[in-house]
Length: 256
Ligand SMILES: [Zn+2]
Ligand SMILES: [Zn+2]
Image (cartoon, rainbow, N blue to C red; front, side, top):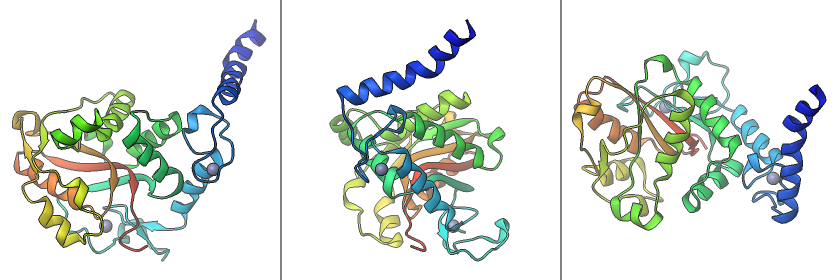
């Protein structure tokens, strides 16, 4: 009986994955090795590990999680020197925007599916934030309505849903709205230009949902931190108690 139970628990998923691999042979988007488990999405386990190891080669800013050269500083002394004025309290990302994480972020713009492995990373990243027990509400970074119609879903909202389900927190899907379509034009802009392009881009549609709450803002990628700063500013202006940030990936703009 015990053997049957174990076989069902361990063997069946393996067979299922092998069967899927036979029917839908999939090669890793990064290294082209075959992918052994559906849980890994579109890159192989080795490339996921590579991405996690890449993060370990750096220290990280205590506030915004930017990668910093290894200086063997105490955690509280680790600062990128560029985020002090940002309105959010702290930010954490699953890892660096390269390899597996980059492919997963790009895939999430094409298909509304978050592989199991990334779901686990999102949860682990949540627990790296300080004072998670005080977070009361998850707010995904919204897309402009025309972009939402085009894509059919908001990838930041999918990330928020995956997290909300695991940590049992509510999501405010419409409390924050994007007025201007800024996403398309921002590649190559520096932090000042980004800040300028974001002025007035977001509004609060439901201030009562925001007031007095400790909020976790969720997005797919953080680049300079200017979007998170702009949104945190208006959330705090609307009475939010505190804003923290979680993203799937962090671009290496500060140091790298
Ligand atoms: Zn690979
Ligand atoms: Zn920083």
